[in-house]
Length: 174
Figure 1 (cartoon, one colour):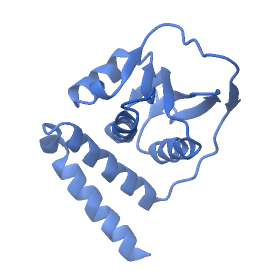
Figure 2 (figure 1 turned 90 degrees about the vertical axis):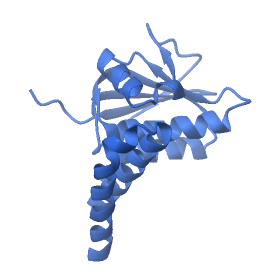
Figure 3 (figure 1 turned 60 degrees about the vertical axis):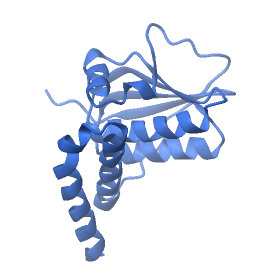
C-alpha cells in the first residue's frame, strides 16, 4: 500500500502555530515544510506545535529539517517560551528521533491536542520544489543530523557526499 506524501495544515493562534502533518513526511515534502516554518518565523512566531497524530512515517531528510528548527528555536528561545513541541508522534517516529539523537530537541506531547484560544486554519500551497531545492534541503538536513549526533556521521557520510555531488552537478547544469 502506497501512502501519499505529507499534507500540511496550519493552525495559527495569537502566540503559537500548529502545523499538522498527515501522511508520509519525506524528502519531497521537506522543502515545503522548511519554507512554511521559515515564513512563520519571519512573522515572529516562536512557539510551534507539530501535530504528528496522522503522520505515518518520517524519513531522515524531514527529520533533519525538523531538527534544524529545533536547534534554532532552542537557541533563540532559551529565555522565552520558544520551541517546538511534537504532538502524538507514533512509536516509529519517536524511535527514529531517539536513534538519530534528536529527541532532546523537542518536547513530546501525547493525548488530545488542546489549542488555546481562537485559531485560523489554512492549507499552504506547495512551492513545487525543483530537484536542486530537494537536493539542497536533503543535504542540509543530513548535515544537521550529523551535527546533532556525532554517531550519525557514519550513517550519513555517504549520503551527504552523494547529495553534495548531485547538488553540484545540478548547479553546473543551469
